[in-house]
Each structure stands twice: as C-alpha cells, then as structure tokens.
Amino acid sequence: MPRPREFEPDAVLDQAMLRFWWQGYRATSIEDLVKATGVKPGSLYSAFPGGKRTLFLRSLERYSKLVVPQKLGELAAPGASLSELRGYFDGLVSDLLSPEGRQGCLLVNTAIENAAEDDEAAAVVRGHLARLEQCMTTALRNARDTGEVRASVDPAGSAKLLVATCQGLMVVGKANPDGTVLRAIVDNAFTVLA
Amino acid sequence: MPRPREFEPDAVLDQAMLRFWWQGYRATSIEDLVKATGVKPGSLYSAFPGGKRTLFLRSLERYSKLVVPQKLGELAAPGASLSELRGYFDGLVSDLLSPEGRQGCLLVNTAIENAAEDDEAAAVVRGHLARLEQCMTTALRNARDTGEVRASVDPAGSAKLLVATCQGLMVVGKANPDGTVLRAIVDNAFTVLA
DNA sequence: CTTGTTCTTGAATGGTCACTCATGTATTTT
DNA sequence: AAAATACATGAGTGACCATTCAAGAACAAG
Image (cartoon, rainbow over all chains, first blue to last red; front, top):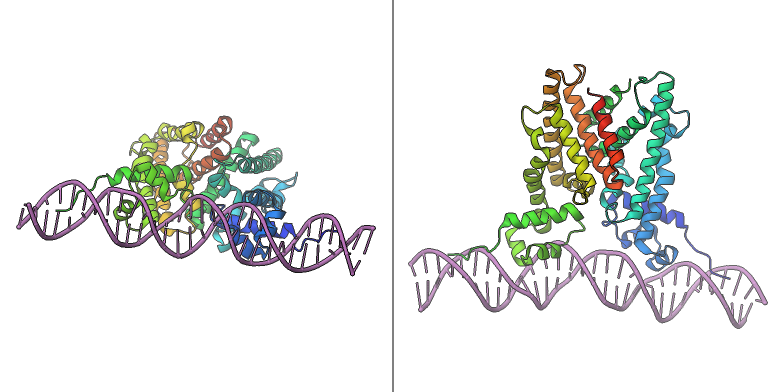
C-alpha cells in the first residue's frame, strides 16, 4: 500500500557522519545535510524522528560500526600483539598528516564538543574508549606472553595509558600536524614497553 | 575631552573567557556575553573591533596568561623537577574530577573545535603546547640530573609524550570522569620514568 | 480504477544569530 | 557655559537556524 522510500537511510547517515566529522555538530546545519544527500527536510525528519540530534547519535553509532573497525584493523583480532598495536599508532599518525585525516576522530571531537552536555553522546564515546582499551589490553597481554614486551608491564594499566596517549596524539596533531613531533610521541610511548 | 569608558575591557575578557571555556566558541552567543558582563552590544563591538572572533582570540590569550600559569604552578619554575611534574598531573586529575573542572582546558577544546579552521587560534594552541613541552623538558632534565628519573630517559622526547598524555587525559576525563581510570593513566605514565 | 497508506516537496514558522547605527549622554577643554 | 569628543543604549537588520505542515505524488491492495 504505502509509497516506498526513495532514499537509503544508511546512505544519508554516511553523509551526515562525514559532515559531523569534518565540521562538528553545531557547525553542521540541516541545510548542509539536505544539500549533501538531496533528501529534503520533511523526508529527513520523517525518516529520523528527533531531528538533528538523532541524526547525530545515529552517525556516531555508524562511525563506531564502520570507521572504527577499519582504523583498528588487525588490532581488533584476538591474536593481535605488539606489531598490530604499533601499526595502529602509525596509522593514526599518517592519518593526521594527510589532508583527509586532519579532521581527527569523530569520537574525540564529540568528547570535547558534546560529552559534557549530551550524556547519550558521551556514552557512545565511553563505549569506544572501552573497546579500544580492551583491544590494547589483549595485544599487550599477548605481547607479554611472547616476550615482546617486558614482563613488568601491566597490560591493563598500560592500555589505559596508551588509550590516553592516542587521544592526546589527536589533539596535538590537530593543532600541530608535524610528523616529527607525532612520531616522537609514538616512539617514546613504545620505548617504555620494549 | 572624550567620555571615559564605563567598563573594564579585561573584566569583559574574563567573562568571555569563562563562557568560551565552558560552552565553546559556537555555542557562546554575543547575547550570552552581554548578559554576563552587562555591557551592551554596541559597546562590546566598539571596544573589540572584529566582534566575536576578536573577543575569542583575546580570551585565549588571557587564558594563556592567567589560567595556564596558575595550573602550571611550580612546574614553570626553572628548578622544577619530578615532584612538580607529578604535581601538575595530579592537579589535572583532581580538576577533571571536580564539578568546576569538567570543562577541561580551553586550549584543548579550541584545538578540537577551531584549530582546523582558524589558524590564529591554532597558533595560540601551538604556543601553549610548546610552553608546556618546554617546562616538562626542563623538569625532566633536572630530575635526570639529580637521579630522580632513570638516566636512559630522553627529556625532550619524554616531554613530548607527556604533553600528549595530558591532552589525552583531558579527552578521556571529559567523556569518563572516573578517578580510578585517570589515576591509572598518570601512574602508568610515571612508572616509565622512575 | 478506486482507495488507503506512506512518502516527497518546499514554503512557511518562529526563533536566534552576529552585527550595526541613530540617538542620547557624560566628560573635558576652551 | 558651550563645544568637542568618545561612549552607552537598544531597537533594528538581514541572514540563518531547526523544525513543521499542507498539499501533491507514488505505490499496493481491493
């Protein structure tokens, strides 16, 4: 009976995610999204009840589901070890140094822009941090078992530090995208472990 | 001859700084500043040509000049060593855990919200990061000389890492103000050195 | 083909934004 | 006291914001 929808909601979310990522939540207007997707305001609001904020929260979830795993790469595998951990950090650095990577991480941006006033957004960020910490803990535990890192390293504690380090990397990289500095940070973070 | 100004521009900047700090640049309206200072739009614009953005850049400079030295405390002294460095991190953590400290650092927020699109703002942030790095380098060098940290520690490199760590601490603290996590990060950052 | 249901469209709403400007005011010099 | 000067006031500007809604359109079931 009903008329079928003429657009793919996930495609809309992909575009919305990119805009929120590049410009931030407040700086992205509904008109931006209308232009980016070709979907008119009425359709947007009927497909995403709750309007802009819903679009944003769904974009965050989509980022978590699509972009984050791609960035994590093999670090997400249960057998990941020191090289995968290092690979993740190297990937972050090269992202920050490329023109397309200057936007940093949507979840870090969200932590700063929205976490204090939007607890649902903060929860998505916390989930991301927890997942990252868990991947890193596993990798460190594996690396310790194989002797790639010193036995004195506490996987859980070091993982917490490494999570903070990569968030900090993103902040520093956004203000000062200098490869020398960013690589020095990563190098020093890893000299501790070996 | 002229009629004297009835308000103190620095007092206006103090209020503007607080608003930008707590709410961010975009989320702070001129009307917010008018309400906070009692100074009407016309006077605001004549005292700060360039409008909102000038007010913001001046607020950043004022933050750098007034708030940052207070947070740095004794870490800024030439004789600072390991305990001053640790004191700085402990201060960050207790700030993040207090209700008034939830806003984090204006310069970190600026790095995320404005650095990509406003190079003048980014420059202020870079200046702050450089100053922080220099204080930490000095403290680490002093600490190494007195044997408080291992001789194998590279002051310049470790300082870059510690700068990133404290930026990361701010991001993590904003999404997840959990003392256990934040203290674990600082503890692990310092186990490397001793 | 008719009817029912959902979708699309885009103009319209009321609010807020950063910013300006004409008018009036306070102070100092002459 | 009068003139000159810079400041204070706050209504006003046009632009943009998120959101709504009435009207038309497309499809499926009967």
